[in-house]
Image 1 (tube, rainbow, N blue to C red):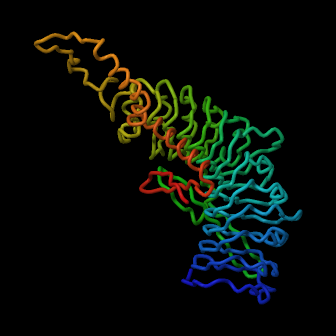
Image 2 (image 1 turned 120 degrees about the vertical axis):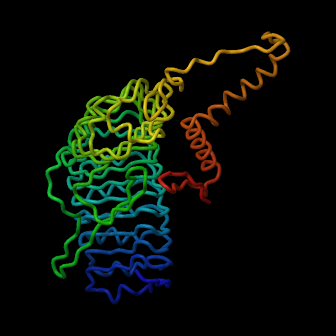
Image 3 (image 1 turned 90 degrees about the vertical axis):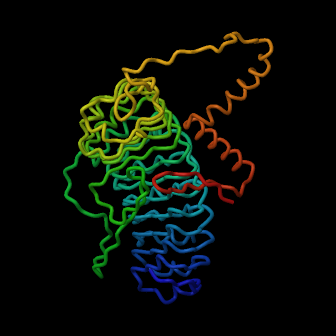
Length: 433
C-alpha cells in the first residue's frame, strides 16, 4: 500500500529463501513476475492490485505444496492458468480476479482439496462449467463472474456438490439450460443460520499473522467489495446468463440466503410461493425474465427485504397491499403490463378506477382511409417498426440485441473483448481493444 512504481528484480527470490509471508499488493509495480519468486517456500504470496503483465509463472502452481494463499488479483496478466497444480496442493485461496486470462479452468486444480476461496472473475476464461469444483469439500466462495463460460450446469459425477458453499457468483457468462435443483439440496451452509460470526482467514502459526480474504459481490444493485468475508454472509448470483425454465423449488429451502439475483435470464412460470421460506433475504432481483402469474403474498412476509426488483416480466394482478411491498419504488415493478396497484397505477391499463376510458373521435371530414394509397408506406413503416420498435421501447429485447452485436464484433475482431463496469448501481458492457 505504497506508491512503488518499479519492476521486481529478476533475482529477488535469491534473498527470500526463508520468507513465509510476502505481500507487495496495492502498488504500481509493473513488468513480469520473476520466476525466482518460486525459490522460497511461502505460505502467502500477495501481488494483487498492481500492473504486472505477461503470463503466470507455472512454477507458482508447482510450489502449492507449501503455498496456501496466491493472490494475483487486478493485474494485467495474460495467457492461460498453468495446468500444473501439484498433487499435494495445499492452496486455500486462489484469487486471479480482474486480469486478461483466457482458456479453460485447469483440471489439475482438482488436486487442491483444501481450497476454500476461488475467485477467477472478470477475465476471458471459457469452456464448460468445471464440474470437479463441486467435489472440493471445503470450497465456500466460488466466483466465476464475467467470463466466457457456456453450457449447462449438469454434472453427473458430483458427489456432494457445493456442500460448504456460501458465496456462489457465476453471473455475466453464457450458461444455459435449466437449473438442476439437486445441487441446492446439498448447500448445508445456506440452509441453516446457526453459525457464530467469524471471518475467513489464514492463520500462520509461526508468526501469528493473519491473511483476510476479500471478494467483490453485487448487493442490492451495487457492486461492493467485502474485505472481511463474514461466514454468515450468503449470496447466489446467476444473473445475465441464459438459464430457462422454472425457478427450482429446492432453491427456496436456503433459509440463510441473504442475496439472490436471477435477473437477465429466461426463467418462466410463476414465482414459487415457497419464497416465503427465505426469511433472511435482504436483496432479491428477478428482473428481465419471462415470469408469469401474480406476486405471491408470501413475498411480502420477508421482513428483512430492503431491495426488490421484479421489473420487465409478465406478472399480472394487484401488488399485495398493506405490506412492505408498497415501500419500494415503482421501478421495482415496471415493465409488467398486467401488474397494478401502489406503487404503480390503480388499474392495469394505467387509469384510475373513477376515470372514463378515452373514446376515439373523428374529424369533420370522415374516419375513412384510402388503404390502397397507404399500403406501401404502412408496410414499410410496419416492417421497420418490428425491428426498431422493440429495440427502442422494450428493455429486455434491447439488452439481448446489443449482447448479440457485441458477440459479432468480438468474433470479427480477435483483439476486442467485453468488460463489465458498474456505476451507481447499474452494470454496463464496455467493449475494449
